[in-house]
Image (cartoon, rainbow, N blue to C red; front, top):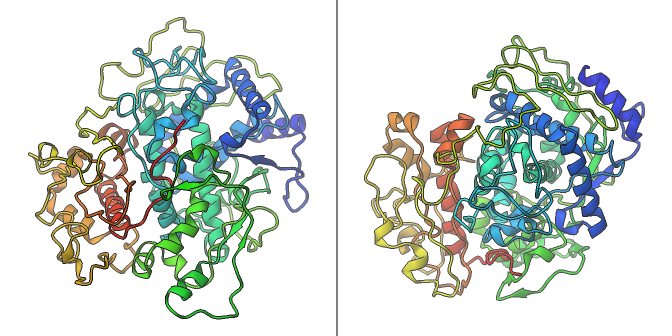
Length: 612
């Protein structure tokens, strides 16, 4: 059955309709998973279990595997995954017409992810046991069928802990600095997107990652972030579709989305075509320009006071939330106010240029109907000159209210799977040898994790790294907390945050990002480092030694300094065929951001993480 016929059948079942202008007759609202009522979460869990029992999780894992190298590392990433998770949601609505895929606001959990309520028995379950099987949460006891019969597998990347990932402030910086989708996409894909996959391990670091329900709520959040960016500057961002596809052809609104008979432009606007959903982003408008002008002595009476409409927020204790689980708005929305209020103009100019350019970004509803959206440009169907993948395209299972079991097509794939039998009786997990490095941990070649022990003094060497962890014996892109040879230095400074940064008054002045089209992802630190590393090393191996903190002066009252995000692993970079030099440069940029935030005395409200 062709996908267009399948969608018509599903639309008839669940009552989805659009008018002559393509406007959806009804839309579901995707909520942050912790904001669901117990009844709503029970319904979501019930639908997910029914879908797995009918074979749908196996189907979507198979489909993701088939197109894996087509949809990552290029501009198919956002439109394809938006269409893919909407497909999952539409199938779920055949079981419950009100089914809406929740999202996970992972950014609020960045400093202490394993403590998140989402990763508990109440929601998605905890870490895998000795056999890596997850035994609690909504997928406890499941048997997954692709690529063989197995339990849901997880293995956190730091043993019982999860290394820190990217902060809401850094993601907000990417949104602020991106003026085209081709800038936004690598910024998000190479940071938050990869971080959550690597943190979970198990199924999530394989091509069949949709086996884990974490995949679906994670990608719903990635999709939400795209929608937020679209509305930050609608005239510039909303219909942005540029860059290149997997075959290095120009990406356009008229480019067909692989597997689906939809165009990339059909995925752009929420509430239209098949995109019949919105997100529950908090309706918050903060007047950053007023704050900036007041601090610069340029207050103008004509600027209105901020309009704030927020549910009750948990209290800040010493500048941080003690329990981030209770936050009623996404973390990236919340931090916009703290960023504009607490950072000096020179840091704002470097990392948040849209905050200093006049009108505040629109951060209301991620494309809800009450927000002005620019008229869609005319676009023609762009017929590719070559197929997206070799061989036959897999056929979806029959779409019906209760889909019957199905068999996978015998389609060769890059990882060696050909014919996969859905009725296998083996309980083995043959996709990956349990003893292999595919399940990356903190004790692998990626370096040890310097745990965040907040009971220690912020200046203690146990937090900021010791000489035993410093240095690298190779010419690869490893990191050292004691490096002083200029690898991390910008504009002549010997180390991040030192007094040699150009100020004698004690006010931190960050090194500027270079001007030019590549300034979004190239810092002076990244450029100097990449130029000193051999191209042979880049093509052969990717290794980043991790330290939670760089040796930067944080004697500015920061009890909870911002940690470095954990880098991508060699396995994850290789399986996606990501450009190693670009991954390395962007990780250096992320570390430079952390240094600037800590050196500027910025206290992230989320730097402590969740507590029970």
